[in-house]
Length: 205
Ligand code: IMP
Image (cartoon, rainbow, N blue to C red; front, side, top):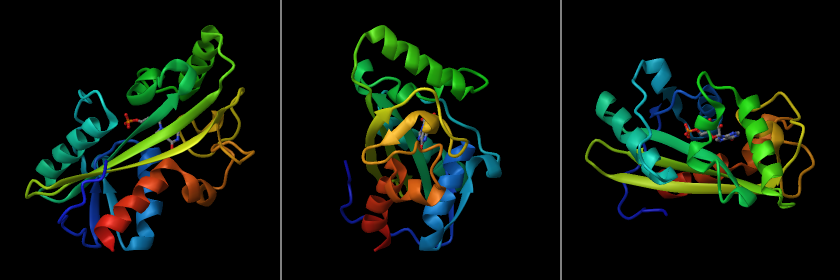
């Protein structure tokens, strides 16, 4: 997944994050701050949010990074991520945000996952979060980095922290949901943290 040949470096300073999702922005700010980056989101810059028309995390991540890079003339970072449930054939996957409807209601989205799981008749409650980070530079260079965290879905939801599907996800080896965990602990194991670590190793070394 990583295309890291002769990649330009990311120079510490302002980094445009091509997302309007406040949960993601907050996590990306935390994850990039130790490397000297001030993450500025597309929302803060008033950029339009492109429609996610691709059929993969990487495709949608690249589409968002390219749009933000073109709008700002700066290297741009994007995050396309989601929850992939084994018994549902990987759903909601790239449609994770869309399962929350408009306006976004993640309690509704978690209920939908739970009811589809019940309807599937499967006892398998395993799932994973996937995060693909894409970087697009003004010279046309692009790179993608993927991180995953495997775990189990619980019901009912637990915890007020994090965002999205965090209250129903317990990572392997843990007892707390991501919604109950201290953010620093989630950042030590999350799909997003793993993708950031790959990006860091390739672009910030
Ligand atoms: P998109 O990448 O903008 O299509 O949205 C991804 C969606 O996946 C988010 O709106 C969340 O619902 C879900 N998601 C991604 N990462 C996380 C996470 O770390 N915790 C909980 N939900 C997540």
